[in-house]
Amino acid sequence: METPLNSTAASYPDIGTASPTQMPHSLVLLFAVASGLSVANVYYAQPLLDALALDFGISYAAVGGVITATQIGCALALLLVVPLGDSVDRRRLMALQLLGLVAALAVVGTAQSATMLLVGMLAVGMLGTAMAQGLIAYAASAAAPDDQGRVVGVAQGGVFIGLLMARVFAGGVSDLAGWRWVYLCAAALMLAVALPLWRRLPSLIRQPGAMRYPSLIASMFTLLWQERVLQIRGVLALLMFAAFNIFWSALVLPLSAPPFSFSHTAIGAFGLVGVAGALAAARAGQWADKGLGQRISAAALVLLVLAWWPLSLMTWSLWALVVGIVLLDLGGQALHVTNQSLIFRTRPEAHSRLVGLYMLFYAAGSGLGAISTTATYAYAGWQGVCILGAAVSFLALVFWWATWNVRPS
Image (cartoon, rainbow, N blue to C red; front, side):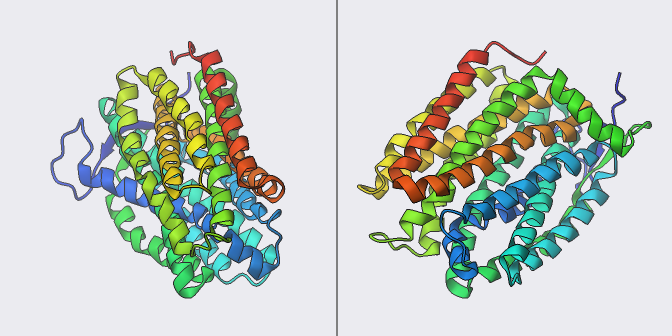
């Protein structure tokens, strides 16, 4: 039997006498804020694709490759960096990753060629993902078993709000000072959160017998082979995040062109209407802990499919676009948190590896969604994008129906 590397016991510095069965709200909030700021770095480019295409001479059909480079970095982080949380001191790991992320953001902000831009985006994707997902696994391991759903749900809600605010922040700063300052300001924000993280992150009790790095990475393939729930929820994540990126990567293209001709700030603000998804994220983990995971999954996937009808009506009504975004984000975030809650039940000693494997599916889906949607838009316009998104969402619903009776042991 595998030796647990981190128990759920933790010490909480500078937080007084908190209940041992419930993580203090201030610490949960710190996890949420830090996770949100970290993941935002991965998504700043989405509302800036047209500006990047113009500045670096990249065609609309190929500019989705900027997002794909970021997602390749995500995949590298999930496979090679995030699993380290099951073997090394997580507080030190977070500090090193944060400093590396600051450097990567500076590279993107000062890039003078498309090659440097892509290299910087790859590094931002790798280190931003390592921080965000490492913090989610950190929170799950630090929480008591009966508090895990709440903690993971709130932390994931922070990730979702960070994702939404990334578009607003990127659009606003870009309109005021240019796209480069988006990444330079992001580097300053990450430096600002460094000290609170170092002071407040709990120290987990580590058991002896930690695996060496090659064995740790090899064990991920064993987990993927053995855990049926991880396989199923991973495929659902791949399809769901492909649908997400099909929408968000394409949205800037029609909204920045006539007849809309919206600014980056206005385009980014559309992301705020999906804040209801953060509420779904905060609750879905608790509902999954009560045995309602499959019902939540079904409802979430139905919302994901239905969302594409109002989204397809965008050229006739922006209110339809708003309704579609709300449905898309509600369904997607409820499914995402439910997936994580079910997966974390399977191997408590392997939270970092489990989240790394699960999010590998996410990275694959996001990258495929980004590159497919810009090419689809170039050839079939907005309606073609919506047909593609609806087809991928429906495929996810069919896959869930075919595997609904598989539950964690």
